[in-house]
Length: 589
Image 1 (cartoon, rainbow, N blue to C red):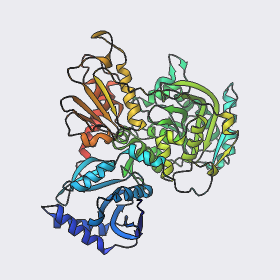
Image 2: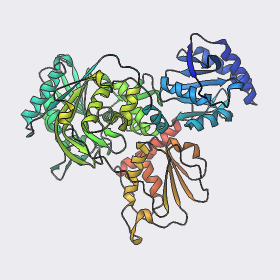
Image 3: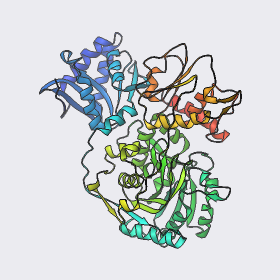
Image 4: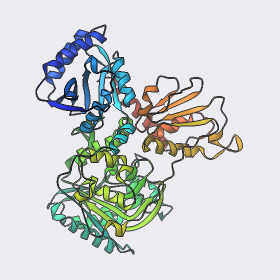
């Protein structure tokens, strides 16, 4: 028999909640139960951002949920005794997720009943802290579980219509042809005067993730934002803007951003306009701490002052695939706008959500996507270039990314950050809410070859994938692929097939780990496996764990093999320090 469960917002502070709190915590906390209940109630009274819901089943109130809408943390939830064990809990949690998206919960460690209930739903313990003398645990919803639910969830109706422009570039792609097409694209969006006023400071944020777009003098399109597009943008801005700043924080060799500028020739663009155009390394820029509007997983981010002080920010991503994010487009490009510690925090607390958090703070006024060449297969740096002869532009990140995904033959569901941004109302994916100006998508679309993610086992190296999202699968593939090469110790054999005394098991996803063998070597990967962190073995923190974390976790079993370099040695050392810094910062609430 189906159960009709709904949540009803209660205006004001319901007096019943106080008695629920007093009775409940006095019964489950042998020590300090009454004191905790009293302090918790005082906190609830003082928090202006709390929302109170009645849980109503078949017209009858059977419990309460209290959630902090500023950070989507469930503070309390209660069901009356007669309603427990009737499958009501998953129903009201689904309703909470519909309203508040990627939620978390906090509860006393001694509350084993709620802990087990939340764990079975898909929440995972991410940190412990003390509150009013009581040991507490925070539980975050598994991103993989959240994405599953989003795919069957209807988004909030978008009000209005967003314009996305598409402009074809003549296939010879001369500087003049690119500039003319860029100007046409901006005119399609209302003209430069709609975005930049005379004398304003404009920041251009290209994608210069690594040097792979130019190797030994040979250019490979689709890796970095083409300098010709950036140069054309500078030329259009020159008569109007007071200052133009080209700003980037390269993600791979994080201390090498200025070298990336020189590598791709951006120093020459700067020299064309002495005193007006400058280059800024966002990895080393002074930062300002900013509160995230409706922040989830994190409530604040450190943002480079160059971006905070800018009058106008123009986001200039590349049309390319990404082995873990599905695609690296407008939303993903802002990962390069934050300093190294913030980049690492994004992985540690949830990369997809923190891409959205970052976008909410920076909010570029214009997006110009470089589609002269796209990158298919194993992007963002190791794929194949694909000549597209396109520029794509708009003001709304979700709408622009949705159009770009369609051009590449992908659906919004294929890119977690875009899907999640849509459900947080950052923009529309519905075609009746997106006006495409220029050639139709059908005229310009070309299916991009998708990367093949290989998580096949070795002889003693076993992967247990329990419905992991593309993040953990993609980053694990990235590392495992480095084991699919000859083993110097065993001729005719691959590293991944090296014999070990005990099997090495890697568990990923929220639904793996039901049959853990403590006599074997076990690795638990990401937040989805955090509840197994104390089950013997090692845990790799993150969502998804940073590539460097996975490399260290996997290559500990291959001490005779040189570890792959995700970044240079100085950067590898820094990453370890960054993780320690993050862990230390989480000892309090």
